[in-house]
Every structure is written in structure tokens, then in C-alpha cells.
Image (cartoon, rainbow, N blue to C red; front, side, top):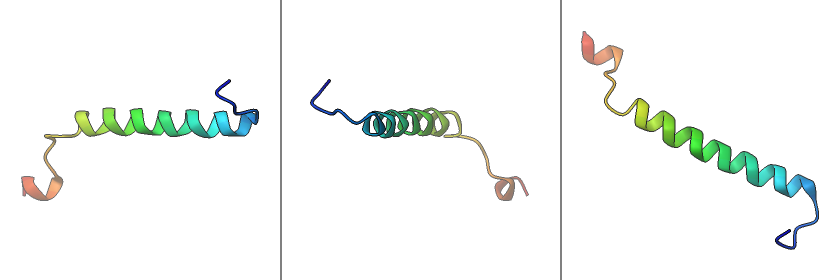
Amino acid sequence: MFGIDDPGIYIAYLMMAGCLIFSLIYGIVKWNEKDEEDKQ
């Protein structure tokens, strides 16, 4: 598949995509959240 025979490469690509999706969702959720320093 895609000319890549090593399963370690597939795992690395899947982990990279998972981190990207997680960071996008986390950033969207926390975008307008106030910091503790701003509340004081």
C-alpha cells in the first residue's frame, strides 16, 4: 500500500494524523477560554 512495506511507518503516519486531529480539536475547544490570570 502506497509502496511502504514497513508497518512502523504506517504507525508513525497514523500517530501523526491523530496528533494533528487532537490538536485541532483541542485548539478549537479552548480558543476563547479565559486564562486564570485574566480573571483576577
